[in-house]
Length: 400
Image (tube, rainbow, N blue to C red; front, side):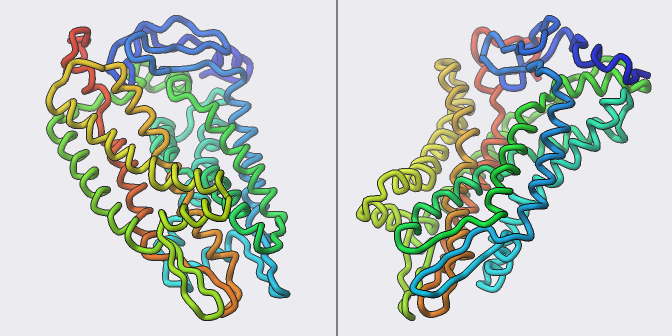
């Protein structure tokens, strides 16, 4: 059993000599890393592992801090809106109620999970996992907890919600007096702490630490789960998700994403209509952000995934490096399309002044949320190592 006395030796322990690259399935020999060093796949450039300074202590500190600021962001006002003598305030909790009262329960659930339930679960699981590890003990169901953590990480959208709040501020600050509440500042610190904690989480290092303190299974384990994947099933699943995203993207652009009610008159606005309106008002940066996040990114991601899936289905052997870079970009930027959805949610929660002026989400909001979720699932279902499977330098010993 490894105890507190040799905790430093755990942090500097040598990881398994041979690791499989998560993206191209190449088996790479990794030397012992010093703090600040990282191991990169020589074939596809994927960062296999990185050794951070005092990683366990930092993750714990940032996780506890993030939980404190998350709790502090809930009970107080997030934003307040005042126009023509009328005022409205909202908190994060009250925004859920506004969506439910507007019969958009799906959006309320989406917001609840992406900015509260999933982040809270992630932080609690990290603390449960790392507190025993720091003392040299194996956490209960440690490997299972680590697997859940990495499954949940892509669905944590705290920083995207914060960007959505900033975009919302810029959109309405010229027509009304907007005040930032205590919860807004608490949420900023929560987002910063949450992001810092997740940036220090390294799957290889944590898996190796679990192996070192697990007296029952001291044998070498595979860092990346090496599951037998059916190539044909993987390709078919990705195609099904891509087609579904295309089908959802049509109503997401044709139907109104937001409905503004001014003195009893409804003014529905589509995604492109909102971009054109913002551009006409001179809000060029905001119009550009909305256009990139809501139009350019979804379309580009759908086309990129379609091309990647077709290339592995047709067993192409060229442009392997370019295709893996395209996959990484598509996987990274896809979730940021949720900015427009969060903008609508925040505006609908804040601007509620009866018949004078109020904003409600449009039908396209649900369809567009579906596009973002389905394209994320499509990127997850795509097997990047298939890009290299038929190339001349494919490592034959990894062939399934």
